[in-house]
Length: 360
Image (tube, rainbow, N blue to C red; front, top):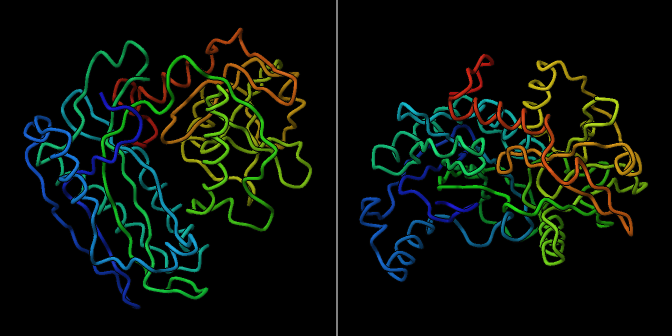
């Protein structure tokens, strides 16, 4: 079973290079054996093979991405269905956000229609080689928390450069890997950090490479202290909740309203976030997108969960802020959190009818 992210890159990859007036596309078949033969290889042999699939000699080492973090990426999944097919979840939203991110970083935006075509073609090519996830009915027992899928990482990579500069002729690269559960079972504790993820007027709304440095540092520190997740507050007053380390966050208040921080230039517009708001409204839940203080969260929350492509819907059992700890729903997943998880995963894995047109 796949555990979290894996660098077991599938054989087919995709690149597109902007030449000033058009994008030159290229599908690249990397060294591989059959999935069964690769599974039978010893660790050293497999490591060498996988390293060859993670090598792109045509890409320059020294550039604006490697030197200054000028780059952005997307995270998206293809979910195995009972009938043997694979379906992508809302890739049109990823395509639109990717184009916005690139434009926000001064790059020529990658065309959304080309993004969709490349994503579907990459699924097909790897599937034809046998590289895919197979539906397992056992996943249904825990509402697909243990479900596996194919993870896609579209990202940008700049042309050569050493001085401070923008990328005017970038590459766009797609790779695919197997992925399993993101959060480890048995620990759903979070704590608040006083470090800053994003500032007003910055790039917090862009899914940019550089935005993840501080969240990674703080999340790993929190994990060493026994927490699963870390929560960031606003930069100006350090009182309003903004995001988790790599996910949006929701609070079901005691009055029955589901609140998530409103979008701003410091908060990433999550696609799962957007989907959960739709699902909650259709369940008759009153939703609010607004600023919410950590004090309100600590005193008036009965359920808490985070959302993201990797996390899906991950409940939070408690939040520690300074010397105070608030425990939600006696440390167990709440009814609304479970219903939203079951509905979202059901749509993604084909067990709940997709009335929204989200699955491609």
